[in-house]
Length: 305
Image (tube, rainbow, N blue to C red; front, side, top):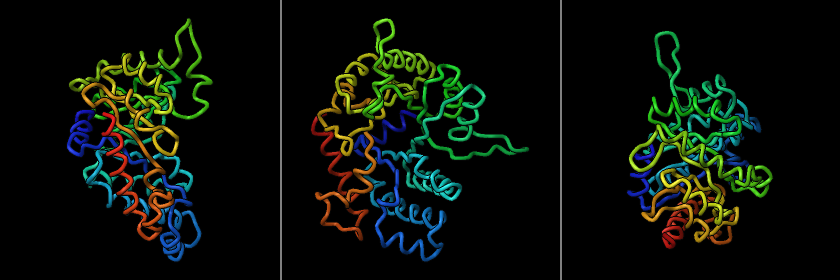
């Protein structure tokens, strides 16, 4: 699966992932108004508004990018109606030829992780049929429970040619409370990185493993350490744009060949029309603003590679 991502990055010349993380306050009034007229100010109405918002952004950006990353929590907050839109969004993106990184950060004891892996990446036998649920191409996972919690995901990735991105050094301000703590002199995030390399050794696909790492762009000095420690691990990189990281901060995440990382931007793209830089598009043309934001982001990243 990682080779498919690399090929799409090379084709688009854009190591850019659009985070489809919609909040109601990102959605222009005219879209919400139409959905509320159909379904009322209900969970169904909110979910319909999110779907119409997502579809417009996908339609205006799919040809520029290799992948998207819907954050499942943004859909779960609307209950079953939201999860229906999550699944609908995943399938629509795949129909457009995009790879989908399901951002669910799952991880639990073995049997529960196996169920999560089946739900998001694998197949389940129902009677005589093999069925898929969310069927994303990649999934973010939490390594806190250790090998017991990760192995079921790796097993499904091997069987189905899917991919993972394991949390290693996250972009949020308090990440260091645990991740930077030293154990026998070594920061925890480096020890997790070593386990990710170990877990990914049996999932190699060319130069890179199907087991990748989440490495925040907000800590470039740590990204540089991890890049050396994980030369064959692909990085999913949050933190660019709205969280403060610049293109220069991204540079340590990449290898000398210009590969090795895919950079996510969520509200910086999907809510671009709210930024002063893109205000000329206005709410009615929010998707055109998102398209321009993708073009600008790709140009910005490529300028430092």
